[in-house]
Amino acid sequence: MNHTAVKKRRRATKKPYSRSIVGATLEVIQKKRAEKPEVRDAAREAALRDIKERIKKTKDEKKAKKAEFASKQQKIQAKIPKAAAKGGPKLGGGGGKR
Image 1 (tube, helix red, strand yellow):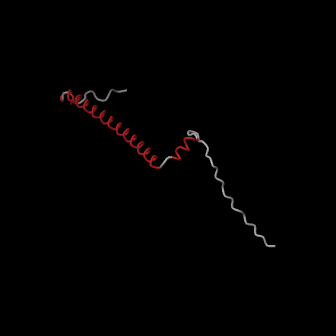
Image 2: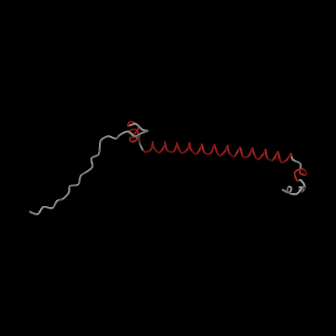
Image 3: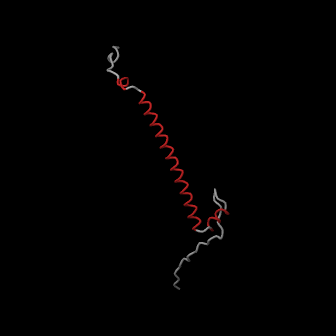
């Protein structure tokens, strides 16, 4: 008798439940899986908008600080008289003998 041994393909069984992961309980995972794509997209857009606003706010604060610092520097430079700021050549050589 000529029997060819054919290995049966075993289908992986899908379990009807999922387990909770560290940071998310099973209920949270199931809620997220059940929500509609529109809701997910809306939440994503809101999060992105929030991040962009935060970045813009920090940039504006930095720009304001820079402008304030520049104006202070200009005031300080305006107070210094030009003749005193120039200064003449230094005398005295570069030190003495050892």
